[in-house]
Length: 406
Image (cartoon, rainbow, N blue to C red; front, side):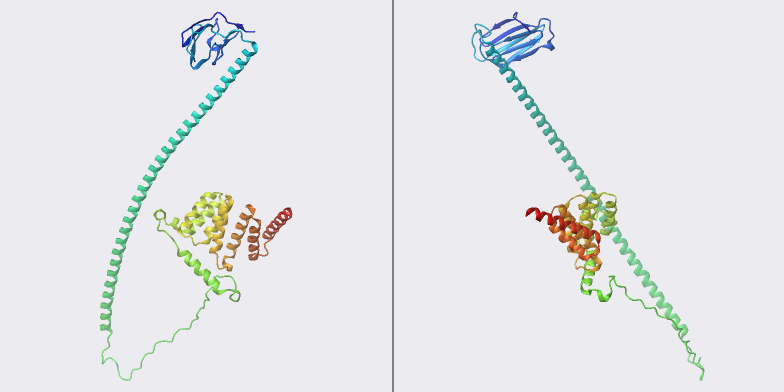
């Protein structure tokens, strides 16, 4: 049982009450103070001080100070008046217990609200700090972009000056070459004139009746005939000349469709402007497992030349590895669009495009579309056992889903 402290002192004015509670040798850190509108408690084991104020207290304006072995309460009355007694008299135990419980619940609720307010302030401070950091990062990024733009501009100007010097040097070289050729022609003309004058026969040098010397007969030899090779492996009787000629023309046009007008592309090295070089680089990155870097290389190749089907076909493989299924379908469809007309030369590429697009459809649970692509691949390579097995599995999945619906 705690020992109730009764040797406290109190004074009052119309607006304030001053209570002095002795700690009786207890340490200040061991004291637990609770103050609400209608209940005040100080617990410093084994002692307990509690009062039930006669009128409500303004807690926000009240305070408690611990020092010199006492606790000094300064309590503000909600309604200015002079109290006859400090505590309400003749309160029943049940009423006192309810006041205690209500005071504890109110303090706990206030502590919870304070914790939530503190957490909110912390979140707001973190948000503000994040916004400040983002602004700093944005400023640094803009500074870096400005520096890069300035360096790009200087590099472009230096490149233009270099091209101008090369052009002037080329013109000078061409002029020197033309002068040298004209000088050689003039010397050759002079030499021919001299030789013709020296070799002219004298009219009396030939004797009448002398025999004419005939030139020797030509030597025998053999002529080798080489036939023009066919681009396609099929025999001529099995070929489709119109489709094959159209495919060759599309390939030639695709190789010529290079876009290097962009300033960003102009800054690249010469080999980096070659789509085939970028395609080989992407293949090496794909083999090493760096699919994102491979996609970047193929993106640059497509920006330079968007007519090469192999770039889209290889990028579809990268997106399939990265689980970018919709992009896989887009790239495979674009590759099939460029792989027309269908000829034996592009059969292998069309087979890969159908399989990759069909796989992406099946991963998206679009099994009907996926089965259509696998059947198109089987028409290209009917003897492929792997394609037959995969197509059969998709058919079973479709049949199973139909049975479940029924």
